[in-house]
Length: 366
Image (cartoon, rainbow, N blue to C red):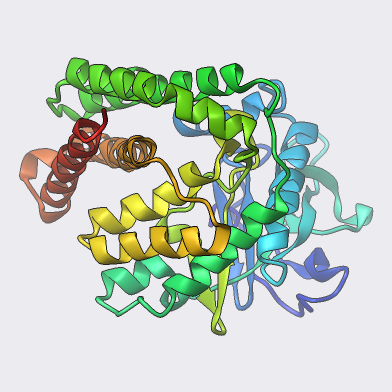
C-alpha cells in the first residue's frame, strides 16, 4: 500500500483494535490523499480516494471538500451503511497520525493508525475491516468456474433482508424520483460513457444509446412513479455486483454499499437487484440470473414490471461497460492497447458484448 501498513499485536474484536498498526519508511509527501489499502493478517484498512475522474461524487456528499472533517464523515457513513449487512467485517473507523518536523514535513516512519494523540497529528481517516480472502468472493468463484447455484439463495435472502430493513423514501414526491432516475441514466451515457469511449478510442453509437435510454425511461415512467408511491424506493446498497458479494463461513455477506451520495444510493429495490442479474447475464449465466429474480420475488412478494426490469438491467450493464471503458482508456494511455495484448482484446470483447446485451434489453421495452 501507499503507506506500507503492517498489522501487529492487534485484537481485531477489541475496542482499540486499530491502535497498534505500524508505520512506513516511505510516507507520502503530504496528508494521505490517494487510494490506500493496507492489509496484513486479519486486518484490512480502507481510506477514501480522491481521484476526481471517478470519486468526485463521494466528495459532493460533503460539500465538495477534501479536508479531514469531510473524510471522517465519509468513512463514518460507509461504516453506518454497511455494518448491518456485515457486522463481523466492518469493525470501526480510526485516524492515521503522523509526526512532523519543525518545517512541516512528515517524519519518516512516523505514520501510524492510532487513537493515541501522543502518536502525532491526524492526517487522514480509515475504515477498519476484517480481511476476507478471494476464494470467498462470488465474482472470484464464477471466474474460477465454480458452481455458485447453492450460494444464490443465501445472497438473495441477505439482499431481501437489507431491503426490508431500509425505510421507504420519496413516497410523497414520485415525480422527483423519476427525474433523478432519468438524469442519472442519461448522464451515464452522455457524460460518462461518451467521454470514456473517446478516451479509449472505442467507436460506439452514442445517439442510438441515448435514444433507446430516453424512450425506455419515458415508457416506464408511470411504473417507476407508482412504485415510488408504493414504498419501493429507499437508501439501498446501490452496488450489488458480483465482486461485492461474499460467502463467509457459509453465510452471505454484502460489502461496499454506496454511502456517499443519494444520486446513486436512493433507488428502487429492483434497481438494486438488477446489478447482480446483469452481472450474471454478462457472465453467460442466464439461468442463475433468472433464479435471482424468481427467489427475490418469493422473498419479497414483489413481482416487477417486465419493461421496468429490462430498463434497469440495461442500465446496470451500461454501468459495467463504463467501468471497462475506463480501464481500456488507461491501457490506451499506457500504450498497451496498440499491442493488442490479451487484456486489451478481452476488454474490447467484453465491452462489445455488454453494449449488444444492453441494446437487446432496451429493444424489449414497449
